[in-house]
Image (cartoon, rainbow, N blue to C red; front, side, top):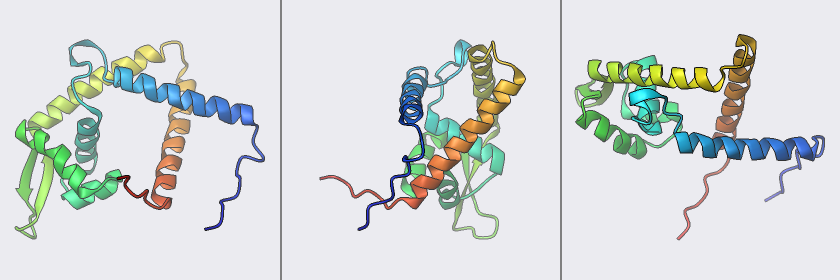
Length: 166
């Protein structure tokens, strides 16, 4: 298999070193705080649940396969992560309107309310963290972070799967 070209030859190593270090620090800080918000709702919803509920809220009811594909994870992971959300009444399982054998996942009214509580708490945290920032700086950061996340996602889907270690 040919070695991929060194894409860093035109970039200053110092900038790339700083970038990779800051991404690592961000990942640690995000995990430490879980970016869970402030107040009573702080850290009250794990990342997987938040992302699943958010996707169902934004895109509406969908099957497990569609949800998994949209999130870039496999169906078995979605099934495992959705189970406690169904058990706690945040997500409803219903029959597909056109194919009664298929299951559709839908955000319940309770799930919608809970998601909004968590969003409000997380918005408050983001406001505190970026308190000294201008709106333009916040917008710029959101644009660049979104671009970075999309590039990571694109790279992840382009790479061959890593075989499991025994």
